[in-house]
Length: 281
Image (cartoon, rainbow, N blue to C red; front, side, top):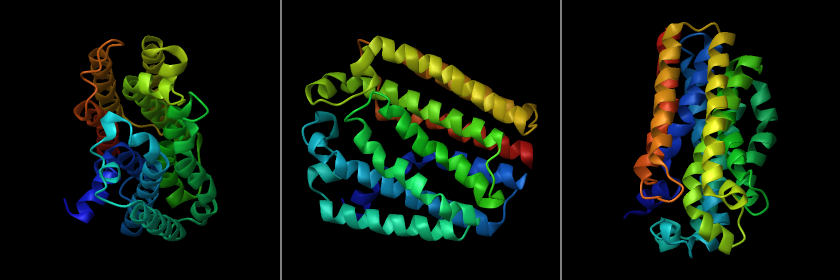
């Protein structure tokens, strides 16, 4: 494995599918159609920088736990393919890219970067003291549509708050489900999660209820922006995806909580964005 490939795997670049489509959704909603190439490029680069720094930070902060977590043994940083000093360098470069990109957009974007950085870089520590850590992760991703919209307008209307809320609750609840397989490890090592607080079965039920609220948020987004029935096809596909995903999980069997299960959740962000795009254009 080359160094470049190892770093790409370390920050799980393919997981960009969860946040980037919602950043574009905010961007396209702000433009009420196709945004300028300038805004599209700089929003994309800001997202790459923000997300890369956050994932690299997460890997550094959790390294001592990942080294004793069997599920993490193939991660490049754990396996020694890349060194911690290289990851720190990547964090610095990624943050520089994020800040420079934000400076190319509406002035408010650069002014709000401290808030963004708080959620992006502080999230890895939350599992050490709160079972709500999943929703801190959700807040980090929820900034994607808000940032995309404000990059053009400099404003944060109620519709984008609905959209960001939906993203936060969607990804946070998905993280509750996926992280439930680590309950025994977390309890042994003093880490917090919904599963350690309420047990796996109850945590998964809570996640299902919160996913319903996230869908309501997506519906309210469509109502606020006066989107047509086309948009709601995307929401319907997202609902079907979530129902299917929940049907696969069990409090007693984590066999299906694989990377395939993890990546399948990206369907939600992709279809909602695609049908928003079709609606607007």
